[in-house]
Length: 261
Ligand code: NAD
Image (cartoon, rainbow, N blue to C red; front, side, top):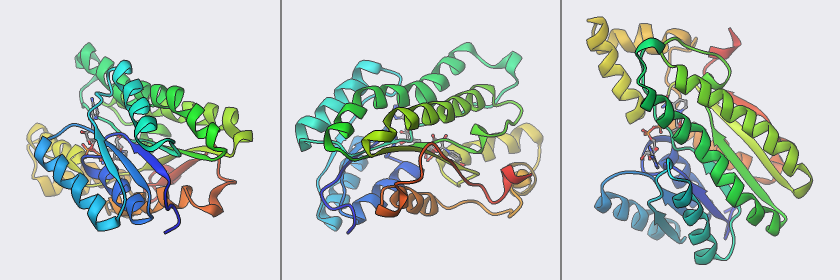
């Protein structure tokens, strides 16, 4: 258990990739601050299961990632509860697909707030605690869309490119403090976020969901296979491990070759 006693805050960890990372860090002995939207009872059950199975402590904080004061409260609660914070995982994210001329301005604001600005607020309030420990890891879950664009996803592409810029700037500022900051850039992972896109695209294009998966969703991904949330979680664990201190400010592609093209 390489992360015994460490404390990780994972935004958007009630579902998909974030929940996968929470499970993998818990298996390594890490205490958790879970966050995200969802049904109260299922979140409570997930929190209990994670704690009991892995003999760790987990708390849940309901901070809405569009609300900076709630993000600050999440960081302060984590510090008060555990006495320290070691790992920040900025994972919460949403998507909305539309041509830019039809993109509702409120979707732009929401995606920039959740997919980009929340990471700023988490790091702004959280980094001093990592520095205090003399060790820390910041992992930003970006996307292949941090490196390349697709049409109809302007706010998401802009937010993820911004998140990669934030990653590099923080990596430079924290480099002498034994704190690294990296971005994982996944291709398509079959989570609720992508399931919604499969359904919407099938209706919009008048084709089957299978055709959407093969031709639209995995069209750019040379392996024609989804990336598994567990693979991303294993990379997050590696980035927190002892052999990763030289990896700093990196964009780590896990996209089946998408951005090699
Ligand atoms: P998901 O929908 O399964 O999970 C998103 C999480 O964010 C959930 O826990 C949700 O509750 C939380 N969230 C949403 N709005 C929030 C808010 N206002 N406040 C707090 N939490 C909020 O999606 P996912 O696919 O697991 O996405 C996780 C991250 O991975 C996102 O940043 C996404 O952009 C990124 N990503 C996903 C894929 C993919 O193919 N699924 C690919 C590349 C990057």
